[in-house]
Length: 236
Image (cartoon, rainbow, N blue to C red; front, side, top):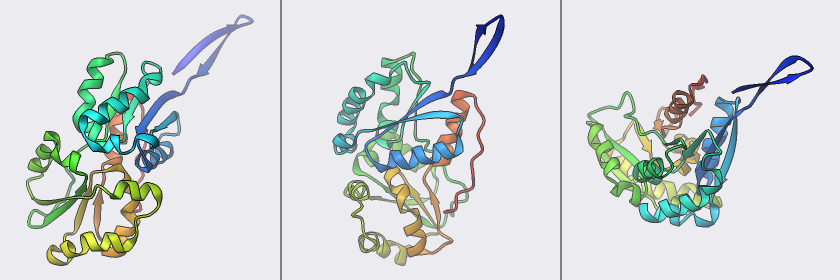
C-alpha cells in the first residue's frame, strides 16, 4: 500500500506493508506462517499463537470460537487480514466472525478437492473429532466422490507441539490401514499435521501424495488482498 507525504515541495512515497494475522493454537499456525512468509515476503505477518488455550481451540466449535474471539480482539480492524490456521474455526466460525466484525476481513484454511485422487482407492483423511463432526467437513467428504476413511487423532496435535509424537505411534495408528488398502494419497485436515509430511514419506514411500491445503490457502490470500505471489512446488 502506497502513501505519499510532502517534504520541501517534493512528494515522497512510502510503502506500507499489508498486515496479516495468523491465528492458531500451536505449531500448525507456525508452519503456515513460515510458508506464508516464504511465499509472500511483501506482507507483514503477525503470529497470534494461543498456546495456553490449545485444548479449547480443538475441543468444540463453541469453545474454539469464544477463545479465538478473546485472543483476536486487539487485532480487529487493525490488520488487513486475519487467517484462521485452524480447521475447526474455519469450518464452523468464519461466518460468525465476519458477521460480528463486518469491517475486518477473515479467511480460513481452504478445503479444496485434491486433484488426481484415485477413485478406486480408499483415501485416508487425518483430522480431529471436532472437525469430523462438522457439517462442512461431511460435505467436503461427500464431494470427493471417492471412498475415504476418516482417522481422528486428537492426541497428535498436542504431541506435535511438545515434540513427543514418535514414528512408532504413527506406524501403530496408520500402518494397518496402509497395509490393507495401499493408498497412493493421504489428506491432512489439521494444520499441525503438516509437520508429519517428511515422516509420512519416509515411512510409506516417496511417491505418497500428501494434501494439506496450505498452497490453496495462500492462493486465497492472494485473491482476497489482490496481490501476487508464486506458490513454490512443495518438496514433499
